Length: 270
Image (cartoon, rainbow, N blue to C red; front, side):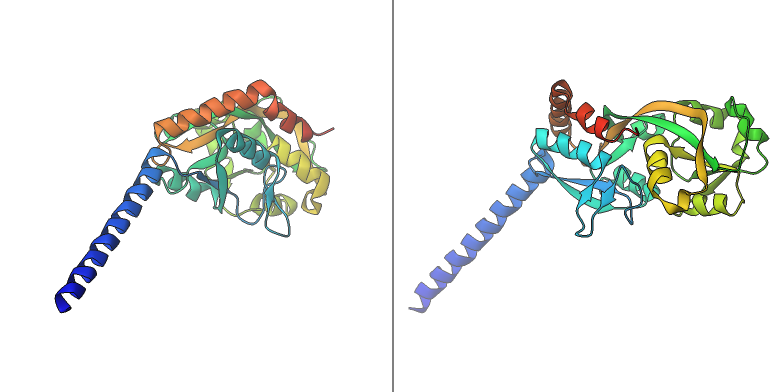
């Protein structure tokens, strides 16, 4: 009887090992062949960037960028997992493969090393936000160097090809830029008169001027700092080639149907 129990227990142990091995193989295949249907996407902390990212009282994410990425994921057969992160940290996470996607991404040579881009996702116009009582004459990027106080920028942000090329080549312009890392820091600095203005993204700036009391004394200068396209960004480390191809095909299909353009039209400022 004891011998029989040993055989039964041994069989149970072997079966458990086989089950554990089977589960491990399935998980490995899902992770390494792109079969997982969840995509981890960076969103800003604190619901801070409308109309691109907006979170309701129940925690549900919405907004222009959210609608665009969810349209892409739906076409590809995936679901989003939103992860709030500061922008600069999210870039590091993309390098390390800790997140799969970032939205509204400008293509740079540095980012090409660890990010694949699909798009374009959105048109991106960079504007200079100034106080309503300011009367600066600006007709070129060189005029930014003549402003009485620094220009606020957010660390880690890219402000369009024209501006970034100018910043890289012009030390005098670079010296006039004041970097911040905290959300709303530039708005507070401008309100207190410590900077002449700060760079902002068109959709967001016009939405904030229209809806945010913090912007009640602000306006956008008519001079356009830069105008480009931004893209969906995919981590090269966490999104394999076959999965990336699936997203590219989904993008092409949704674009052909006019899905992205219909979403963008909803958010254009009248």
